[in-house]
Image (cartoon, rainbow over all chains, first blue to last red; front, side, top):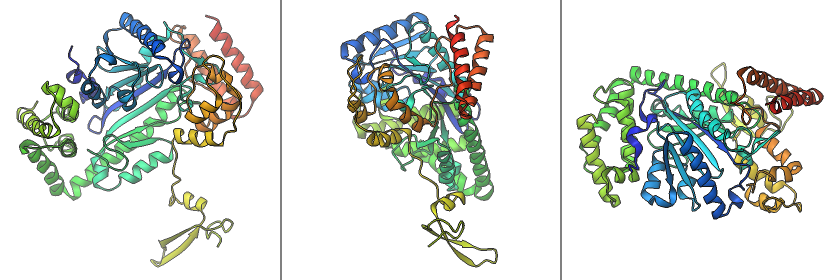
Length: 346
Length: 158
């Protein structure tokens, strides 16, 4: 089994709308089965039955691969996290759990996370509807064969009352170097927060933003329809895209040499360094990405940049090279990977 | 000191502004007016933080879910339910909590087995749900109950 499906992950393809700013759009639907207790009260034995039941329904009604987490090693689990296919809690959980990955690569179903089912769809670019369609198709498929926990008033019942109702979380994964460089990022993100959206840096914690990568998502799941939730996120995302475009425009008008220097200096380091930590590589790759996105660098595709962004992460790097490495060896191998990939164009 | 803007509430924030004649003007504002002027941004807390805050304020009651054995005290501690029936068991206690987290009392999104219904019926249900939402917003509870009955009929009429 190839446990590293990076090559086939469609969300890295940079083919969706506005992929020069929105790397991917994600939809997550939380569901529980009526017949099973929730996570807090589920015994190991019951969890095993739950996994077997859901895996069986998925295997018989759609094409994909099921991963039993008791058979995966820690590096493989970490790699799934680094590829955005599972949540951090799911990666570190001690419970019986499994993941079903659709053959198309655009949908991963976590089984026995905080809820029995966390259906996540990930598509390239700014495309919430497309992402919802993928997740919704799987939800309907499961709904037609399993009885889901539902209440007339509260809607779909979830382990935590913050997810009740639609169980829907929609998010966009954004690259916003223009707003960071023009120091407008805080204002823009705060604007999103005041209308009730959650904003966070994707790698790194709190204010330690790496690679100018951000995630914006809805928080409220009850009281609005699925279409309305998508709409509440769509408009502010559109606005952020416009602000970012303006910021990039202003940079190329007012500081073109400084901008190009930053981009080509980053490229030179990535091509020539002999040691690269994942933090340094992520930050430099952001500058190179900006160069590709703005058409200043023409030798590489955005799909290659996306692939590198995921491959440079520690577990992915080790799986890609097929051996486990010490942190120092990883920095050496990461530098070699960048030299090779940027020389060959992938 | 009273707020320079509304002249009603206590001023808590002091700001310096450049006035129309290019002179520095000192303004003392209350939190509300500062927010209106876009100077102070209210820190939004996440639904999870809100839940925790609400749970600490919730009174203790002796109630145990007959299906999974989760006590209300357990729920207060962890903020997680033990099974779908907990929602029924603790309904009157959690209605208020859920409403203040989400700013809404009831679900208006999709429902189980909707995909199997004919398109016309799905559209009808969608319209009814929108109407239901509007009725609830206007606090027309009788009308809301009527719409809910119609919806139930459509759901059960498979």
